[in-house]
Image (cartoon, rainbow, N blue to C red; front, side):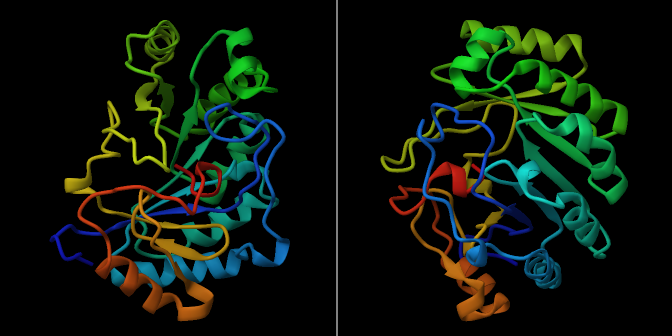
Length: 266
């Protein structure tokens, strides 16, 4: 698939839930959110059908996100369903790592290739402040479990306020170096005002080469994180939703007044 700006669209990010076991200050309100109704969330079969159709249109890279994808019951089953589809060259997941200790091996056995793990600090007190209720030791255990399961290369997603030279970010970089992990620095974004920048160490945020679409947990295909455009697969049909998303993908992101990071997966 090529959009009107000749970008080859081959990457689908899939949010499987709007739920999360953390309350990170830059992502979710302290008191939580109004959750989607169970019947509004896509079934595993619906997600598989979206990916299967996407493959016929040129999708070859899939990333599972949330919310926190590991809180979705039976997530390894979904991974298995997707890994069995011919045409996916890269099947990955972004997670906060809290539940990876117990799920890394089942995910790897199901066909997951690799993980990105969110980690903004290596200090236990700062981690609890940022996440409001998280225990960093669970993340460290999850990273070890992911390495043992072969979910590599493991990339660390580190959110920064201004630069990668901030104290927390520098310590994360040292931790990554000590543990043979890659690190990506993601500048804090604001959907409502359209504040975003290129990910340091990654390709996200570079509109000129953006090759991705997003599938929300409630069944909308979005052509851009920073746009209000979205197309419902249940109402339009999967192929038509893909077609509209690609044909209307903007040249550059602007702002998004209708979504939040917790239901888009970033």
